[in-house]
Image (cartoon, rainbow, N blue to C red; front, top):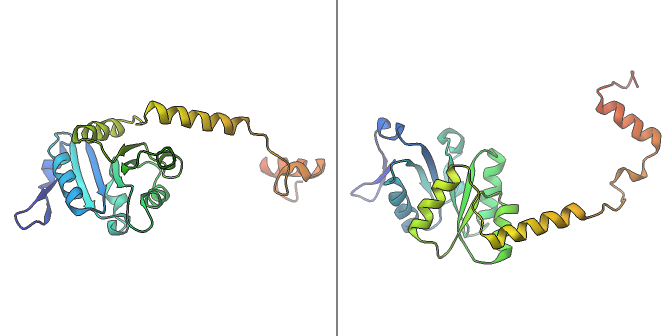
Length: 197
């Protein structure tokens, strides 16, 4: 979808050229050389169309919804706020966007944060190859979730621990309510008005 013009500027190809492509990609990466190189590599794939490539979420000018990407490639190391904050902001626009976070350090905490905080469908480590990138883009766009066995095990352990936690009655719990108050809540949930209660 994007070509690097002779002057180093991006320009859109003819509209009919991208109609046959299936996977619409937006690249948000702070490193211009990496971003433009990645756009060129991905755009050479027959089924991929790079529709937008900018430094970060702030440069999208609210275009994500109109661009309708199938997948957003997001830089983990965005200077300042970080890629996870951009992921949260993207999720606030639409939970339908698939996010592949790239350049993630190989630490359990960072990888789990991509999944838990950023809502990513997958991640690529800093040392990923071009082949890894292309196959990961294809997999995530197809609806797969990318996760190493080690991280999958950690994620399941965390889910299991959360499922087994007991909820202690506290000031915000329903444990301190009377039976009548609980009954009134149930009636309100059932759609009854104050007068009907």
